[in-house]
Length: 91
Image 1 (spheres, rainbow, N blue to C red):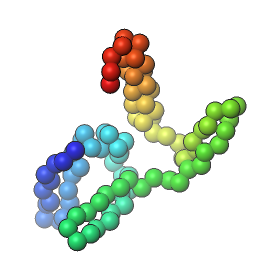
Image 2: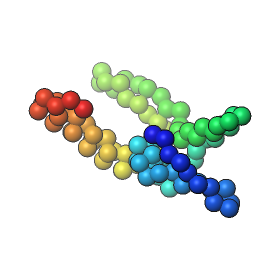
Image 3: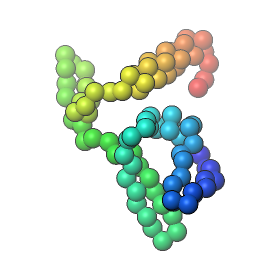
């Protein structure tokens, strides 16, 4: 997604809602910034979790609880994908 953003007098920019939703960003979360000669890269700061096997299934443990909004969105996405697959629809 490419967007044109404006910076206010204090140097702040607002990330578009579509970007925040896609990256599961919520108010108060931290972003890592990397600057180059002609561009800037922002990345969400995420914990370094570990993978472990529980009863034969790989489980990711981020070290902190998932936000309810992330769980709801993931469930909705998986249900939509299964429903579309059952109906023979492509993504």
